[in-house]
Amino acid sequence: MDTPDPSEVIERLARLRAAMRQRQVDALMVPSADPHLSEYLPARWQGREWASGFTGSVGTLIITPEFAGVWTDARYWTQAEQQLAGTGIQLMKLASGASVQYVDWLASQLKAGQTLAVDGAVLGLAIARLLQTALDAKDVHLRTDLDLLEQVWLDRPALPAAPIYEHLPPYASKSRSGKLADLRGAMQQAGANCHLISTLDDIAYLFNLRGADVNFNPIFLSHALITPTRAILFVAEGKISAGLSAALADDGVDVAPYASAAAALAALAALPADAVMLLDPRRVTHGTRQWIPAQVKVVEAINPTTLAKSRKSEADAAHVRAAMEQDGAALCEFFTWLEQTLANPDRAPLTEVEIDKQITAARARRPGFISPSFATIAGFGPNGAIMHYRATAARHAVIVGDNLLLIDSGGQYLGGTTDITRVVAVGRISDEQRRDFTLVLKGMIALSAARFPRGAKSPMLDAIARAPLWAEGMDFGHGTGHGVGYFLNVHEGPQSISPNTMPDAHTAMEPGMITSIEPGLYRPGRWGIRIENLVLNRAAGQTEFGEFLDFETLTLCPIDTRCIEPSLLRDDEKRWLNHYHATVRERLSPLLSGDALAWLHTRTEIL
Ligand code: ZN
Ligand code: ZN
Image 1 (cartoon, rainbow, N blue to C red):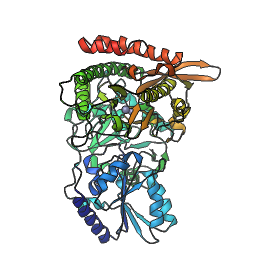
Image 2: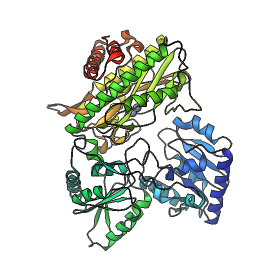
Image 3: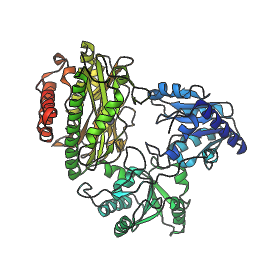
């Protein structure tokens, strides 16, 4: 979606306020969410963007007759200030770790008897409960049955219609019927005989299907209802071919129209009185929850598929290792091109946008590549310090002069999802930059080399990567790592190495999980550093204290030793780095030739 002109935003707000008056609504909330609580929203559900002009991926718009504001966190403040200028919409700065601050604001601003409207279809159940409690206390009415956007957004995009395809063996290492059998076992254990799944990566995983309904994540819009004997997949008509439909039917999967999910759930009321529904309150919206008839008993627990999906099989891991080799080889070719281009005095100025293009082109030459796994972040100097920076045709830097260049990028391959950040020196870099880089590297090595009990809560591991920075009075403002899917979402739960995640039982580290390790350091206006590898949880022995795990580093790409201050590294840290570089050289050499192979040799020299 293009950013609208401020005058357009003012006009849209006026139409929304008119619709509010007509329906006797005193405040309207527009979250950034879809009916599946997805990270990337299909255009149809980018209503907060449409109404406010703010295009950041996270933000909540609230409109009253005399006020309009967008609540968003520190990553987006600069962008929001620019995009909201002239619209009359205020930027409401969310403090870190207070992602639902607007609930308090609403409770304090609205008066008894007034009405807040939110489209329940896109309101997470957990947030709905928070809102309900806060508003009940003030005698404010919450309406979730109105979609006011539908009334005023005349050219609202339709549902995405990309075809759905099978994720086939050997890449899909476990059969659909096998996964369904496991899920039914978990349902039985939970005492449930039906289960609704709304989260799109869980559905894609369960049925070994993929789609292209949003950028970067190979998922498709759907709901799924599982019973002991049948499974129903609700998708828009025309997205599943007759052949695929027949293959699904062979595994006991019926395909039904996307819009019929509500009616199918309502029909559960007709079942014998013992229908028990397993439902994950963090993975359905309030609107979807309303579809379930009151007489159906609901057991709330995490989706069993969320846990199963996070634990990659040994066969999956083998495919991921192969995808990492291709990805690493693509990066070596890219970095070779980058250094040659920068060294050529006659070249046209190199921009951050060109870097994005070249890195994607290098990946696209590799077998099994499907798409980037997120929007490339290529930030030179000060831009490297802006988290979620995205160079655009209209606004980007030219790579000129001495500074650090941060590149965070990734690919979707049939055999895995990659996500890697490297920082490289451009020109001459300073002692201060080398010290910063080395401290971040020490954090990455510390966590990469850690051993920990199986079942350790993943958020607890965050401090291990931060300790070398803390020792010097430094810190960084994001989590150390996130789970990563298998040819699925680059951000996947339930594990998360972050101080912002509650260390509850679901965050436990289990064998087969893939997670990123990506500590950083950001000096606003000067430079940013982040070093990111993906790691796999593997068994690391049994002691009298129990079972232990450690990490196998999956990502294969040289770390720029020109940015290191060697005197700051201990011997064991140097050994880790030298061993890593020896592995990178050994595994990538067969996939490279010519200049790129020579570059790999140079950049994997012993330190
Ligand atoms: Zn990344
Ligand atoms: Zn990452």
